[in-house]
Every structure is written in C-alpha cells, then in structure tokens.
Amino acid sequence: MYCYIKDILEKEILTKSDIIKLLRCEGKEKEELFAKSAEIKEKYIGSKVWLRGLIEFSNICGKDCLYCGIRKGNRNIQRYNLSDEEIINVAMFAYKNNYGSIALQSGELEGNNVAVRVEKLIRNIKELSEGKLGITLSVGEQKPGVYKRWFEAGAHRYLLRIETTNESLYAKIHPNDEMHSFGKRLDCLKSLQDIGYQTGTGVMIGLPFQTIDNLADDLLFMKNFDIDMCGMGPYIEHADTPLIHASGSLLPLNQRFDLTLKMIAIIRIMMKDINIVASTALQTIDPTGREKAIKTGANIIMPNITPAKYQSSYKLYDNKPCTEEFAEDCQNDFETKISIANTKVVYGEWGDSSHYDKRVEKT
Ligand code: SF4
Image 1 (cartoon, helix red, strand yellow):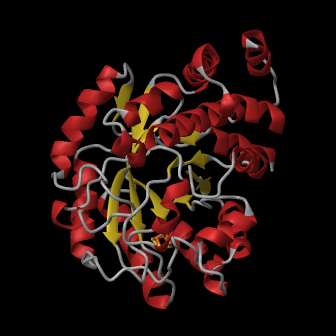
Image 2 (image 1 turned 90 degrees about the vertical axis):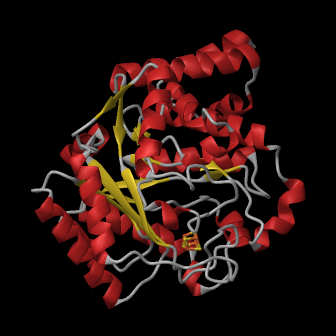
C-alpha cells in the first residue's frame, strides 16, 4: 500500500481515483504526500512567500450565503464601510511597508455606485504608489463590464471562491434564488479569465453534506479551469448562520484542518506553478496553521491590515484570529512564524503567478 501511494505521486496526471486515495491517506503515506508537494513547491516556486495586505473595507453584503457570518440576514453584527480616505491610508501603509501587493475585499454589492467607487480607489492607489502596489480584488460577482473597468483601472488579480463545485451541494449552502446561482458564479469566473485577470478560486473543506468525492471533483475543476491562484480553507461554523443547524454532521476541526492540508498538497502537485494562499481559517484551528500550509505547498500570506477597530466585525466564521491586534503587531507575528517555517518573506514584489504567464502565452 505504501508503495502504491508512491506510484501515484510519480504520475504526470492524477485521476479522480488517485486523488481520492491521496485525500484518504494517513500515516507514512500522508508524509509521502506532503514531502512530494513540498519538493514540487521548492522546485517551481522556491522558498519565497509573497504578501497581500488584506483590506476588508466593508462588511455590508447584499447576499445571504447560509454559512457566512456577514450575510445580509445576520442582525447581530455591527456593519461598517471604511471611508475612501481610510482605505487609501491603509493601502499606503502597505506600500510604505513594502508589502508589494494589497487585496481589497468586501461583502458583495452590485450597482453603479460600487463600480465607480472601486474604480476610483484602484486608480488613486495606483497613482499614489506610482503603479508599484499590486492590487487583488475580492468583491464578488459583478457584471463583465464592471470587471473590465476595474481591470483597466489597474487591478490585475481577482479571487472569486466558488466554495464548492458540486451544484447540488452549492444549493444546500446557499439560498435557492437567482442571486445565489451556481451558473452565475461560473460565468463570473469565466469573465474574469477572459478579461485577463490572474484568476483565483477555491473551496471550503469539511462543509456539511460534503464528501471526499466532492473534494476530488473540486480539485479537478480547478485543474480543468486552469486557475492561476487558489484560496482554500477549512469550513468553520458561525453561530449566527442557518448552517449552524447542520453542525452535528461535521468532521472534528482537526480533521477538517488535516483535509485542508491534503487539498493544498494535492493542488500543488496537480498545478505546480500557481499561487496558493495559506488561509487565516487554518490559523483559527491551529495557531501555526498558516506555517504548516506553507511547508505543505502554499506560497501566499494575506496579513490583515484592516484598521483594528473594524476587524472584529468582519467575521465570516467564529474565532477568527488577529481581530484585536493592530496591523503592525500582526506583521511582527507572521514574520517570526514564517522564519520558523524556514521560508523567505519577500517584500516589494507583486509575486504574480508564473502559471498565468504560461497560460496567456498558450492562448
Ligand atoms: S460569502 Fe460573500 S457573498 Fe456570501 S454572504 Fe458572505 S460576504 Fe456575502
């Protein structure tokens, strides 16, 4: 059996049944899997870890995803919306501290006001940083014309997590209406890729009703879609969400954590040169979770630089870490930990996915 996993790890292309075996492996086999993904990361990415200073600029959302703590229907949180000046100030903090890139993230709102505002913010940040600060957006589903405007304004990466690629599971964790359509999510991802963004997606791991088979399909979807960036994390329940009622069927947190590390390892093996985020949700379960993800195959860290007074109101799930600290404290914290993981945090570089360049060359 031990040799069998080794054989799978030597294959050029993994089948669904290979992936399922890897997701189920334990003990020495799991060590083999992690050693292989670490070897591939070292070969194709090296020891570098790039930064995206995360600015969660608003927790106001027009949608009602059943798992999310900032869903529209949750009346138990304080809503906030940073002023343009506050956002620019935080972006300049990132620029002056040589982060290389920021990620602008918010709840999902559509409409002309949002389109105009975000475009203006992108242009201002680009101008004030003399074009040097890379901008990733994560502001949900929008019309193709809006994505295009933002791309032309200077944003060049977009993260839109699909959360699960199984349509019937998607329907179980979202309201069943036009606003929460699986098809629309797929169309948006395609638009982003067509417009020219470095396109990222990802899934939650350990959702209620989710099977190992579903997770294998998620990995195959990402490979077939030819994504440039991947952001995956364990599902962590939030008390003020409808999905809390399905908590009885969940895997223990340590198993969701373990499964997430395996997903990261397998996607690194399948897509050797993409960018993979070490998610904050991993750190919620294990204080050294992000570092373990980096050792396993991730190469992107997103330190939260949102002003501290707002951070506790942006909880997609319970017990999110780093919500009481100032950005500078978090910075010291991750630098120390990343040095323990024996990798190099790179400052002043965008840290783009080399997969993207190759993908664009092919088309
Ligand atoms: S997951 Fe995103 S779109 Fe859904 S409710 Fe939360 S913030 Fe809004």
